[in-house]
Length: 185
Image (cartoon, rainbow, N blue to C red; front, side, top):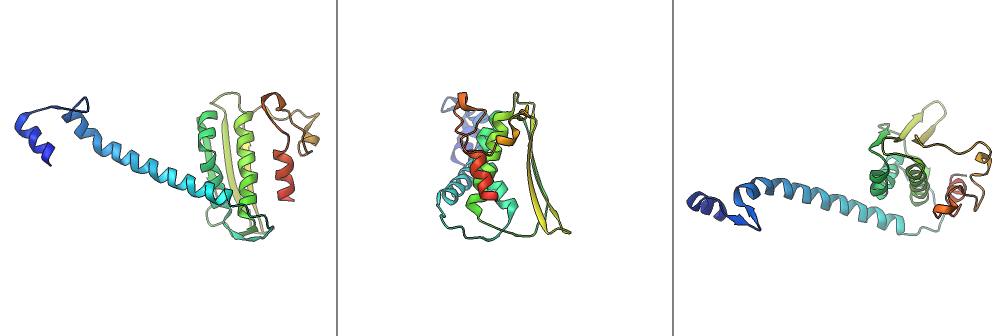
C-alpha cells in the first residue's frame, strides 16, 4: 500500500532495477510460483525422507498404489523433465488397496522410471505410467511404458540377471532390474 500510494503521487520509479508498474504486476504471479515451488519441494523432501527411511523388514501393509506411483514420479521429476516432453500419468481412480511394502515398491518404480528415461532417444518420445485393476482376478497392475528402442531380443532373457547390463559404458551396474524383480517376486 505504501508503494502504491507513492506510485500514484510520484509516478513510476525503479525497484530492484525494474519499473514499479512492471514489478507490481509481476509480484502476485511470482509469489504464487514461489508458493507452488515450495509446496513441490516440501513434497519431494517428504518423499525422500519416506524413501530413505530404511524399512529392512519385509512387512507388508495395505497401501494405495497410486500414491506410491505419484511419490516415485515426484522423486524422478527432474529426470523425466529432461528426458521427455510427453509424459503421461494415467492412474485409475478408486483402486483397491494392495498388500505391499511401500519403500520397496517405490524402489521398483523409481528404477523402472529411470530406465524408461534412459531408453528414450529424443524428447518427443513418450513415457506413460498407468494403473488399473481387474476386479475378476483381484489384481492391480502398474505399467511403465516408454517409446525407447527396447531391449534386443537376444538379451531380453538376461535382463533380471544380477550385474547384467546393456548400459555399462554409461555407468549401469546391472542391479536395478535384478533387485526390482526380487522385490516383486
